[in-house]
Length: 269
Ligand SMILES: [Zn+2]
Ligand SMILES: [Zn+2]
Image 1 (cartoon, rainbow, N blue to C red):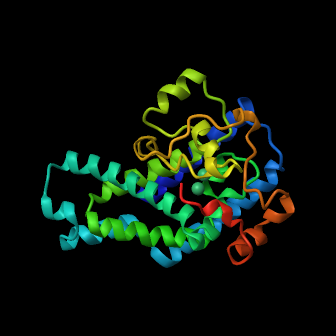
Image 2: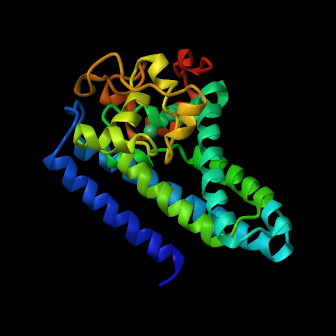
């Protein structure tokens, strides 16, 4: 089995597991049609997968192989122990993804695209895949740049991408974790309750909890909020401008960056 097949199988397995858990232990009441939203989010994902495949091929992992062959990037130059480089690459890539997320919230032009992710009226496993195709392309270019500069082991990039995908599905899922487990996990990892605060309509809450895998960046850099103003099941999800399902149809999501988007959210965190 090649790397892409393994990634795809992990993706399907986590997706199915989260859907089942969402049915049995939901955390937040739903306001929009789940079938419709999941349909839209998966269609967007299909477009994004096609686009990335057509434009970039294996993208980030390919970039890591390319850099390795040519001795590009910090790690290819330093030649530290493999295990240490592997670990540092995973942590560093996560920090870079965190910073990217902060930047797409701060810069109005980038927010126009990222708002598509935030316009979901409910959160579930499929929300973790809901990104405008242009944001996906931008992320790929950014990641390739980082991989060229860092020169990580291609396997580290592959593992990082697989973990990032799995964690995005987990942290967006509408599941209830035992309070103790959420508390303990949050010391290191982003949990669904932590990320749900990031999807609140309240501006200060949207501009917090930017982490995808590790929660430590939010804690260290002052963007962490433990509790939203409302209780978890009462958090209003989305952005204040788009409150109706007709405003967030598939076509409207594609066109959203080119229309009027709520700029109040682009205040620095
Ligand atoms: Zn965001
Ligand atoms: Zn999110």
